[in-house]
Every structure is written in structure tokens, then in C-alpha cells.
Amino acid sequence: MTIAEIISNIFLPISLAIIMLGMGMTLILSDFSRILKKPKAILIGLTNQLVFLPIIGFSLAIAFNLHPVMAVGLMILATCPGGATSNLISQVCRGNIALSVTLTAISSIICVFTIPFILSYALDYFGTETGATIKLPILNTIIQIMGITILPISIGMFIRRLKPDFARRMEKPMRTASTVIFIIVFIAVLAANYNILGKAMKEVGLPTLLLNILTMGLGYLTARLFKLNLKSAISITVESGIQNGTLAIVIATSILNNFEMSIPTAAYAIWMFITGGILMWFFGNRTEEEYTAQQSRK
Image (cartoon, rainbow, N blue to C red; front, side, top):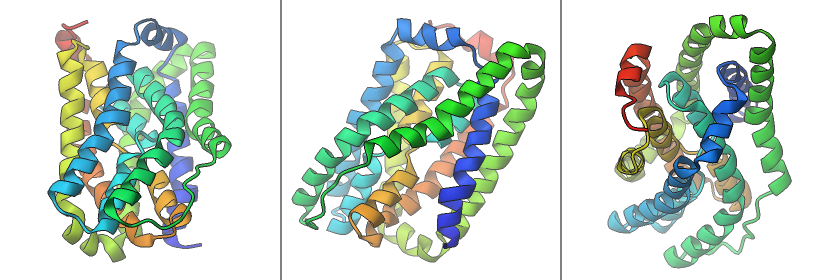
């Protein structure tokens, strides 16, 4: 097993599951029922993830006249929204964690059906038809979502219900731990992709950076345009710009059998950790009083 496989298949899932457990200790059932009763935030977030993200990715591939393999690689990335990393960043940024988790869960299930459609079109349009059948394992995807996010969050919520004082005491330490693990994962991603980072940045560095910035910016603008509060706007911003790189790499290397198609994902991973880190620093350092003062839009 290579270093990259150890990181993506063992270290990352375990680390994120631990973070999700701590995240669950900050949540109660009413956090989810509140957003389900008023689903505007969910609809805005899903529209950004499942509609605007692929459109922006497709537009950038054409605008930069990318090589067909790189263009399809960018589209693979643009069809894989969310991921547990976005929940981690939303937590440190003091966003709406319940909204972030809900968007990750729903988009991860929906994209199982949208990915084959979008990528089949991209392969045909950019002229890189491989003859491969793009079929994602629905059951395995659901199990992965359950194992990394929903199950540990549910355990954390159960702990919060039984030991509310303990859960409140652990909130700050878990946020600190989230930041540390985020940095460790970033370093691990750099190490795992060291051999292809130069090529990745040279060929698709600018398009992937723009994809990250544009999707995050659009996520924030649409959230504020529809008068969502700051916490929800933060979560939608993060969910729009933090993609499921692990799934993208699996599609490129295992389903389409083309390692080069994973190069845009390697470049994007660097950018999303940098911009995610900036958001964590900017929003995470603010006090609860500052957040309360900014929650003027309901």
C-alpha cells in the first residue's frame, strides 16, 4: 500500500470520524429539525453544489482551453461536492454545523446519480471517450457517509444528551484538535502528492484556484442574497468550495483508469486547504459575541 493510499484509506477517514464525534457533541436534534422546517438554506446549498459547481468547472475548462484529459479531470472534481473535510472547516469557522452535515449527506447521495450523466457528457464533449462504464457503488457510498460522518456525529449527540456539561467543556478542545488535524492532513496531502504537484500547478494551477475561489464566492453571495444568517452563509461557502477529493481520485484512477485525470484534484486539494485555512483563521478567531452581533439576518 502506497503512502497516498494509507493517507486516503486509513488516516484521513479515522481522523475525520474522530472530528465528527466531537462535532456531534455540539449538536442537538433541534438543530436539524430547524433547518428541515425551513429548507431554504438546504436548497441554496444544493444548487451551488450540484448545479453551479459543474457549470463553473465546465466554463473554466473551455475558457483555459485545457487539454482534454485535464478538462475531464477538472469536471470529475466539479461533480464531487462536499466531503467530511467541509464539515471540519465549518465547525472551526463557527458555521451552521447541522446545515453543513445535512448538505454533505444529501449531496453525496445525489451525486452518485449525477456523476455518470455529467462525466459521460464531458468525455464525449472533450473527446476522451474511454469506453469505461461510469457506475458508482451506491451502497458503498452510503456506508462511507454513514461511517465517517453520520454515525460518529450521532454518537457525539448521544454523549451530549447524556453528559451535557462534559460536551460543553469539550467544545473548545475539539475545535483546537480540528485545527491541528486539518494542518496534519494538509501536510499529508502535500507529501502524498509531492511527485505530481509541479505538473499539477503548471497545467491546471490557475483554473483550479479560480474554481475554488469562484464557487466559494458564489456560495457566500447567494446565501446573503437570500438573507441567510452568517452561520449558514459560512457553511454554504465552505460546502460550495471544498470538494470530495478522495471520491474524485477514485473515479479518475479506478473507474476511468486514467491517473492523469487525478492531477486537477491534486492541485485543487492544495488550494482548498489554503483557502479553507484562511476561512478558519478569519472566522474561527472571532468571539461568540461578535458572531451574535452579526446574526442580524434571519
